[in-house]
Amino acid sequence: MGRPVMIALIGVDGSGKTTQARALAARLCERGVRARYFENAGGRPLWNRLARALGRADGVALFGRTVYPALEATVRAAAMARTVAVARLTGRVAVLDRWTWCQDVIMAARGDRGRHVVRAVYAVFPRPAVVCFLATSPEVARRRVAERGIDTEELAHLRALDGAYRALPEFGSFVTLDGDATVDEVAAALDAAVDAVVGAGGVRR
Image 1: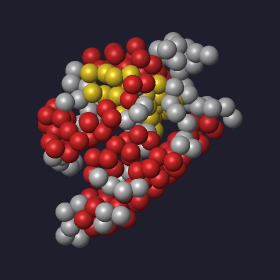
Image 2: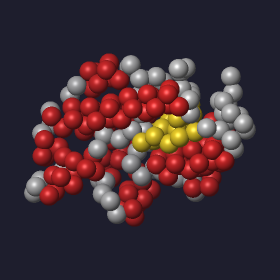
Image 3: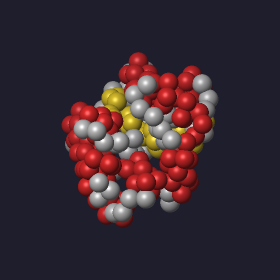
């Protein structure tokens, strides 16, 4: 089993990660590239729904400031481990909806303790060949989150997330795309970014 070719999309909630990652995997398959979409979430919507059902504001209020980040990081780690295993076994190009940095950023935005521990543990996961940051203004992101009707985001939290992404030591190595652009414009920019590693008929060596 060789090292899988991985393409990651990261950004604040409402930046279009899921939409673009799913569409990218589909376009690659249409081009003859064996690709697969992988979601690598920490389960926040599930924990928030559970919390509201039990009369709490959100997952943090339900589990506490210490247990909740550990739970979230563990769920995300399990998802990423599955992603790597499946990608290696199948040999498919892995299109990643979120990756290791997303956990670091959300913990930074909330002021959680233990970020250095999570970063150390997550270091076992391979770095994707291409990492695309969808740079989306907090105002646009907030509107998109509200429109999908699943959850809500405070503007201050979205600004904190954006700032935490830009403060990452690896940020300069990411491909930054205009997340405020139309879906088609972002898709075109994304195709150009991944063409360096994925050709018309397969992976470029």
